[in-house]
Length: 167
Image 1 (cartoon, one colour):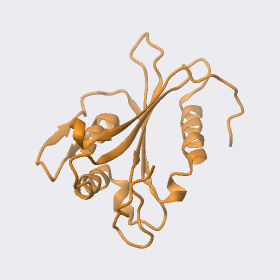
Image 2 (cartoon, rainbow, N blue to C red):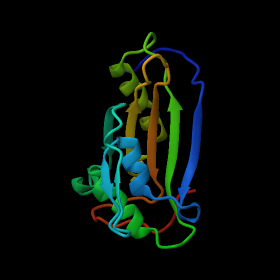
Image 3 (cartoon, one colour):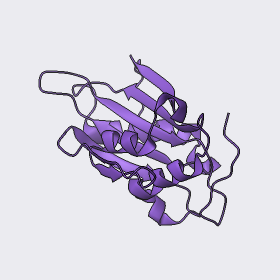
Image 4 (cartoon, rainbow, N blue to C red):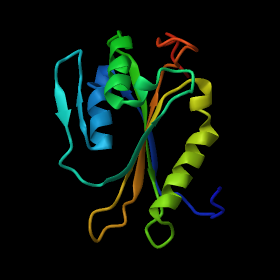
């Protein structure tokens, strides 16, 4: 089902999470998912499970990739392990405002988000994607989705990354 509603997206932010600016993919993934993730490289455990505004979480990976990578602990530790340089780009960090509750229900927001991700064809290109939808605080209208996109592709049929960064 495609949502046939025309609407303006009032806010979108796209940034690279980089090691040179202190970025940590495990921390970012834990924050977005409102869960606990331990960075095996540093030994630091990030716990954002007290926040209760995450209403949808999923990880999308190509079918040919080991399904263990659907676990953000596994996926983000692989991102950290393979990003060896001090100036490595770890993830694309995307935030998109979603229409408020009067316009769409949660199911529609999930569908809209998947349409955006499908349109970008990241998974078809061998890239991992983490999606988290956050509901607004009481009295607020700040529905938004966090999309984390790996900057390296999975190489078909094996659990390693292609070294070349995407542009």
